[in-house]
Image: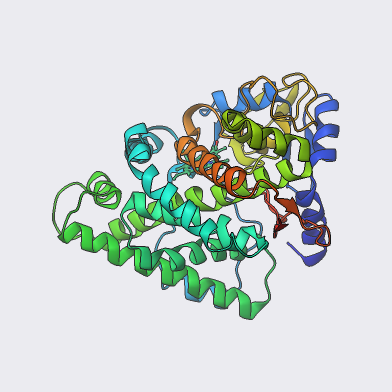
Length: 405
Ligand code: HEM
């Protein structure tokens, strides 16, 4: 994709809502050149695609927007991964890859990590509570989720910053038009993270522990012999995908929830006065400005959707974020309202690939809002710092969130 096309995609990603509105009003499906796909925008149609995984394959779900340069690719060749992961797999292979993740994110596992999450949330707020101002994304939102998912997997806390950095850099390299030298630097960060995960995987094979990495290794490579290179590629790719799915998304929802609450000060005040409303506020933030705006699917055969005939091999962009603003499903869809009756939104997907980490994410946003409403009820957006959204369809969030109190 050239720079001009990237500019158009950027503008669309920073504010996709007018396009969604047009697509919902247009009979059939709308083909969107910037997305290089048919846009599925109505709640009803999004649900239909998600319920027909046999007709709409996830094989292209993570298709990058940019192709790394030859120099960056040469660096990536020294790393791990490049195998199908849970989010891009279909059918029986998908079920095999998903089962250990669902077990690893069970309600009991999530409950077990919550005391740590609560302790870290409080400690991160301790770090800035006396300052009178903070940039929340860097001081808090980009830190808590990585620490929590790292703990759940069994990574050492010292390894978490490199893992989080590697995840951010993977997103930049595959979805942003970076200059050559930055591409190479991003690829190096990704590869450093992959080697760190590989060392962890081999260590758990040799010395099993009571942690999720050990379980994933046992589940993807049964037995206790030395792992083959192919198995190492597969397990590291799987871990990398799980980590990125786990931290970048939650980071973004923390940012969006705080942003929209503070843009609606009366709702913030209501939340401070009535903290029982926090879970509903989390759901409304997830619906109103969805982090994962959409993922791709590719048709496996000729299909008809919303009256549009699609040939086999057609790319569709399944817009959870558009469905969540569909007036046919949600009353006053463009209003942020934490008092609305929670109706089933699609921010965490639906069906075979629905998010197995939704509860873990919700709990972290809940803990965050509990901390901020009780300790900093006078929180406001800094008046002199305009908020810009990051240009991404997969981790929609503010670039930075300057707050004062
Ligand atoms: C606010 C936070 C989150 C949001 C908005 C979110 C959203 C989603 C959505 C919409 C999907 C479905 C994708 C599809 O249909 O192709 C998904 C899948 C997935 N999510 Fe999440 N997620 C979040 C947090 C998490 C966390 C904390 C974890 C794990 C620690 C996680 C792990 C996964 C995995 C592994 C998948 C793939 C499942 C599959 O393909 O079967 N997510 N997520």
